[in-house]
Every structure is written in C-alpha cells, then in structure tokens.
Image (cartoon, rainbow, N blue to C red; front, side):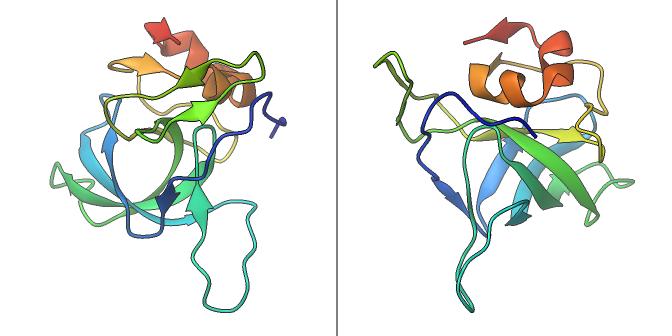
Length: 132
C-alpha cells in the first residue's frame, strides 16, 4: 500500500455500516477491522478513505450474505483536509469489494470515488466513473 498525500480523519470504526458502491451483489457492509492499524488492548480500530478493511456482508444477495470480504473505503461523510487546503466530504460512507492484491472484484463503481483511494489502489480508478 502506498502512503496517502492527505491527512484523513479516521471516521469509520468497528461495527460501522457502509454502502457497497460496486455491482458485486452486496448492498451494505459491516466493518470488522482495518488492515495495518494497531491499538491498545480492546481498542477499536478506525478506518478512513483509502483504508483496506475486512468486512461482513450485512445486506445483499443470498450467495454473498454473511460472508467476510476485503474492501476499500472510497467515500466518507466526515470532512477531511487535503494537502492543498481543500476540505472534502461526501454524502455517504461507501466501500468497494477487492481481492488480496487490491484489485476490484466488480466491473463497475457507482458514484464518485475519492482521489486518495485511487492513489493507493490504482485498479479502483480504472473502473470508477468519477474521481473527486
């Protein structure tokens, strides 16, 4: 994973519900944990835009329901600041299902995608319609 150019605020914690922004059959994810973050004992792990997380399917098709997948956060409601001083926030929290290498499993992403997620995972930028 590449380092991000902006300092994003970690707004999504464990048990947070996020929308699935791709056409994989999942509608809502529940975050289990984030990759690469360590906490004190019994501390909650937080995630932000561009973080890879393990999540459980909360709502979706019968063949993907209650299974654990990897996903990348592509949008968050909480405002964060970019290096050029601009502040960014989205209407919802959303994630895209990916494999262990960071390549998306789906063929299309609905809605905008944050630039920070595309910097870390270039495969997401290939199928995204809008990059903000």
